[in-house]
Length: 164
Image 1 (tube, rainbow, N blue to C red):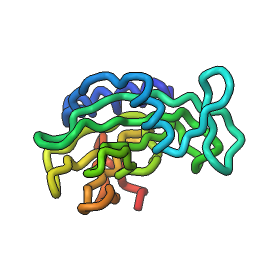
Image 2 (tube, rainbow, N blue to C red):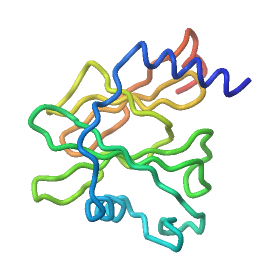
Image 3 (cartoon, rainbow, N blue to C red):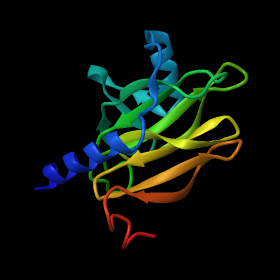
Image 4 (tube, rainbow, N blue to C red):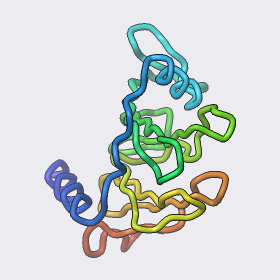
């Protein structure tokens, strides 16, 4: 049943907004730099760890185009982990190249399984919805320094009814 509900939520997301456009794939050096900037330390067998947590992590990276005139970004997805607050689906962070050519993390890890571009933007950065199971999608806006939560969107009628 939970999987069926998640599928319905994701189908609604596809119809309601557009996912960030894909950008060029990362080479091995860029991938290593992104993972390091995200605070992930390599371990044996292609796994990673994050400081203060012994759980094994297997990050998935997705390159995205952010906005015209802005360099590409990278979404770092992590499956459910005890390293973060309990989540049903996983966690995602956004990293982007800063003005000095280094990777920075304008959106630290938040619970979510999919990032959905919103029709609004601020300071040249798109507003982003971060979908997760449950029917309520938090929306984040860049404040000139980092992304901060500005509200939420119901993915179905009443989806945010009992959420702050």
